[in-house]
Length: 217
Image 1 (tube, rainbow, N blue to C red):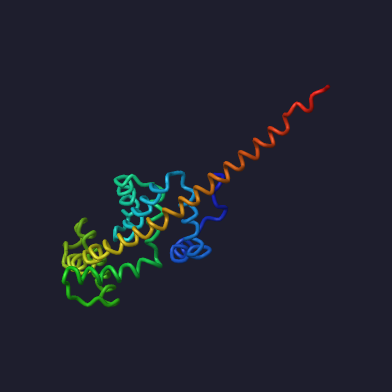
Image 2 (cartoon, rainbow, N blue to C red):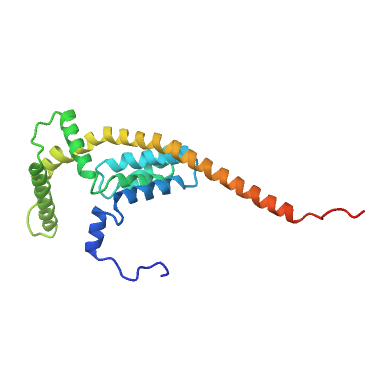
C-alpha cells in the first residue's frame, strides 16, 4: 500500500495516543475544526451534524456512538462527517469529567441515594466486569449465571449516567451548533471570495495576452 506506515504502531503507542494524541489535544482539536470548516456542505447542515455528533458523543453508548450520531444526523438532515467528528467529544480526557457530572445529575434526577465516590464507581465496574466474565463461562457450562452485580451497575451507574448525560449533551450540542454555524459560514464565504478573485485574475491575464494590438493606419 502506498500510504502504509513503514513501522507499524505498537499497542502501547496506540493506547498512549488514545490518552494523549501526537501533538497534544490542542492540535487534535484544531484538526477537527479545520475539517469542519472545509466540509463541502451548506453551513446549516454541517452545524446540524455537529450537534448530532456532540450530543451522541456525550451519551454512554460504547461501540455505538458513531452509528447513533449518523442516525441522528440523518434524521436532522445534517452532515455525516461533521456528526462523526463531533463524537470525538468522547475521549479519555473529557469522558471522566462528563461521567462524574452526568452521574451526579442522574442520581439527583432519579432520586437515587448511593455513594458516588471514585472507589464505589470502580468497585461497581469491577463487580459488573467479573460477573460478565462468569456469565460468559456459564455459556459453555463452566458455572452458573449471576445478574446481581449487573443489576446494581445498571441501576446505580449506567442508567443515572445515561439520564444525567442527556441535558449536558443537549447543551454541548447547542454550543457546538451555534459556534460552528458562523465559523463555517464565514470560512466558506472567504473561500468563495478568494476563488472569485483568482478566477478574475486569470481572466484578466488571459484577456490581456490575447489582444490583437494597435490597428495599422
